[in-house]
Length: 109
Image 1: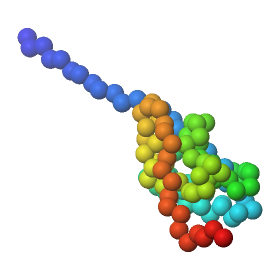
Image 2: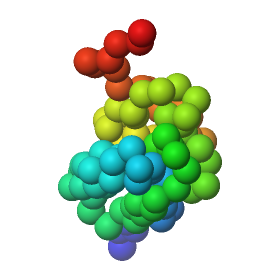
Image 3: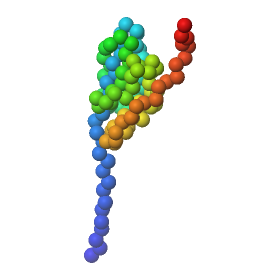
Image 4: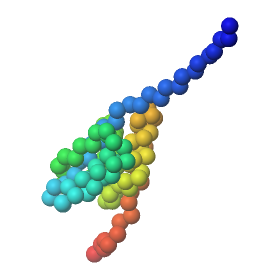
C-alpha cells in the first residue's frame, strides 16, 4: 500500500476597513470618491467609508490607524500607496504612512 502525504497551505486574510474623512467645504468629496472607487476596483469587497469631517481634512485610516493626514502634510495620498497598505493590513502586517501625491498648480503668496 502506498501512503500519500497531502499538504494544504492556507492563506488567512483579515477584513480591512478604510475610513476617509474629508472636508465638505473644500469640495474634497470628489477626491474621496475617486480614492474609494480606485480601492474597490483594485480590491473588490473592501470596506471603504467616505465621511465628511473637519475643515481642510483628507485623513485616511486603515483599521483605525491613521496612514495619511492632509492636515499635517497639505497633500493628498497616492492611491497606489494606500492600496499597498491595504494589502499589508490584509496579510496581518503593520501598516505604515502612505506616500503623498505631488502638489501641482499651487502657489504660495
